[in-house]
Image 1 (cartoon, rainbow, N blue to C red):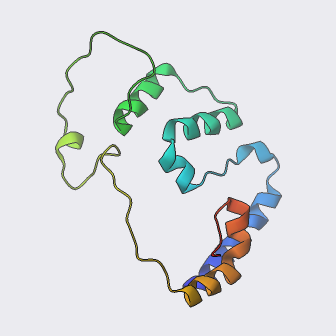
Image 2: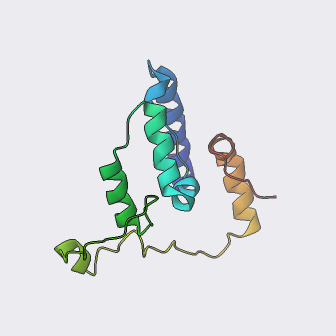
Amino acid sequence: FILRQYEILWDRYQEGKSQLQLQQQLVEVSYDELAQDPMATLDRIYQSLGWALSDKYRSKLQRELGLKAKTTSTATAPAKRTAATTTPSVPSPATYKRNRHKPLPAQLRRVIDHRWGSSFETLGYAKAP
């Protein structure tokens, strides 16, 4: 069921993509790219769409992600405690840890690669050796 649902989803996505009047309205981003360098990825998204990322918003995102700002400042204000920073059920992006899963059995991986391989190639994900 799941294998077929993804195939349907992928086919519909490709159909919708081909029907876009302006291809500049779509920016594809892999999870790996976003996880590895979120600010560079966001810069690429904004640039691709012709948008400007303000310094104020960039600083806010860097704080949320726990990144150091690229500009240097000698004075920093103490962080305010808010419900968002004290709620244990909502993890901070800065402390988020990716799930780790056991590798799939080789036979199942081959089935998935066979059925989903074109999407893996299009999105830049490696297929099983």
